Image (cartoon, rainbow, N blue to C red; front, side, top):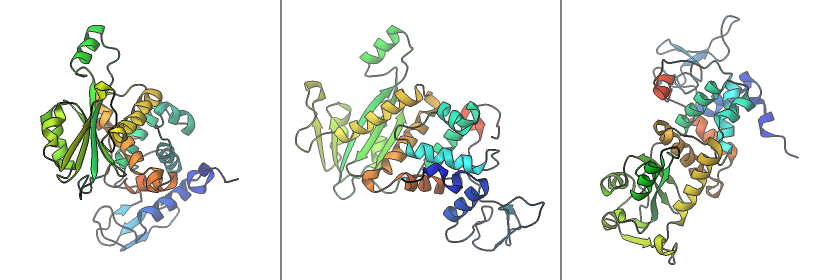
Length: 316
């Protein structure tokens, strides 16, 4: 029987966690986060020096593997951080801050902040346009939240196509990646701006029958649509079932795991679900791969508490 993965040394010991992170981030040699020089560094030794401190020969600054990352100046032990990253990467529908609080032995506020830092690490820059070379891209939108508004407000939202709810617009390339966006409005102007930036003009576009896609669809190699209102969800290869399947996982996660997601944070949750989908097992990734990719993404993304909650910055 395989040993539980969280029993591995780098999940149980802070020094082992540091060594693991150093090997992962500095596979080609130690890099100074202050000046960017490679290899011209030496490790500081001595009883008064913290483990893992290096000094750069070029700029003379000291640093560790966590400087310039989402882990910088954290009081949480590094192996606890690695546990949190693995749990979030391995949980298909996410893991709540309350669950992290219980499993990691930290306060709820700390768990919540840790989770948002990890979501920041999961953020990746788009590489290329979806559907390039004649690929198929599915586009659709979904609505979330505001269930506690008045009956009149909810009725207004239903009549206006979800106007009272938060909107998430997603683009999925079949057999490839998803890109999701928290948008303010679902209209041709807003969606076209997103699609112009992320979808190749030689792509084959698939949507439902929403009027907003009629004009946009003319700009692509082809545009196929299905009539959901008439109970049609597929017509041969014409369907948007892939993006609908993604929304199913996304909504089950929001409803079943997180319960409440504030408007100001919704894009971060989109980023988290996109990350797991884009590193799913069908594309050849496993939980260890996914965790390693997230840990490689921690650089240059230090996140202060004031950016999240509008309050005075705190360190955890």
